[in-house]
Length: 176
Image 1 (cartoon, one colour):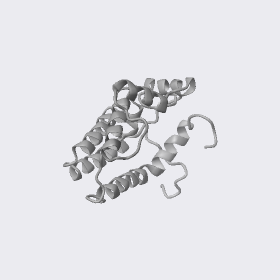
Image 2 (cartoon, helix red, strand yellow):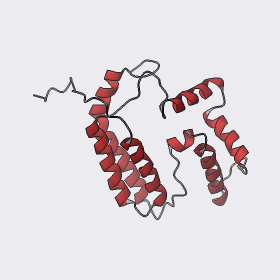
Image 3 (cartoon, helix red, strand yellow):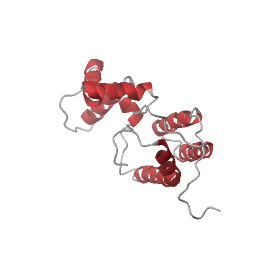
Image 4 (tube, helix red, strand yellow):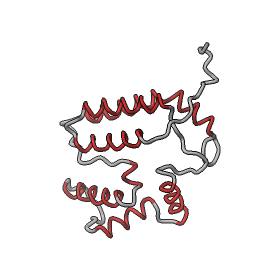
């Protein structure tokens, strides 16, 4: 949108409606592709944006990642051997400056979103669609407890999300 800051609400809704199904399909395809690499690929851990941005789970994830790197003999410097070291590294990674610290505070004040003008929403139909897609993935990968836990976290967030108003795609010339 070639602007600083948040996309205007009407533009967000239009892009959301045009790309919703394709984005979800692409996300599922990516997940299915990576899961399909088993047993060649042994998933050591999942690391989500929500974990990284969380002041409690972020440092814990850093510790788990460091332990995974050590276990697989992946060279890292330094190893994260304490909660304090993990918290420090996490802060330097996602905070660290006055500007990034302010952005991080805004992110948490707004329920996981970095802008304040509005919280982007989804229609009831879109929320139901996303919930159904995540449920299908949970069923498909039910033996992967770590992945299912992440999918359930997303399900919980979707279930508590308020529905946004429906959008009429004004550029759709096929509508009657």
